[in-house]
Image (spheres, each protein chain N blue to C red):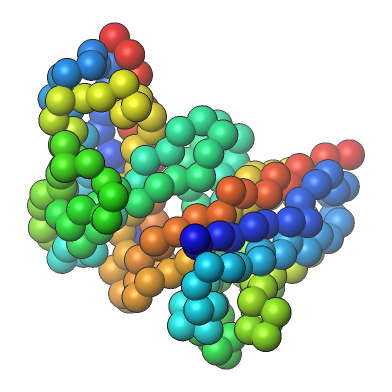
Length: 108
Length: 117
């Protein structure tokens, strides 16, 4: 199975900051990479798919980049509603879906 | 509005069985593959099972293969997960998910399954 490694595990930031989360796949997944946001007690919500495509309704301050094995989620101008845990997930066709271990963005 | 509503969770003894249901509404159920993802308390996300649009193809993670069975009833617009031989490490919130092509694009609110004596 493809392993997904996120860093950092925890990130402390302030409203207005630019935040970057990394995700690395154990083998190439082209751009079959999604990012999800999860708040406590809630289901995950799709933010980004195909590594860099923004899901409808998601604010433009979220962006994704990368190809192959290295990917990044960037939140520019962190808003008060953005404190949450973020997961990357690969959905390469010939492999079981796997998720990163999550990055918790909390208030500094 | 797309909705996925799980039911059937609860407390079960080790070795017991449970069946989860997921009622879908707000979209054409038969045009989407579906699946289940679980999250143990305080832990990350684990995909465990998927089923094709017509229900004929099923997929399982190694961790549940042989003791979980996924199925769907398209006339009832419902997804199921039959779980047998449950153990403590199956304790988790189980999310019903909709699959658009190969992407999870929508999640239910989750059903908590607790395996404990």
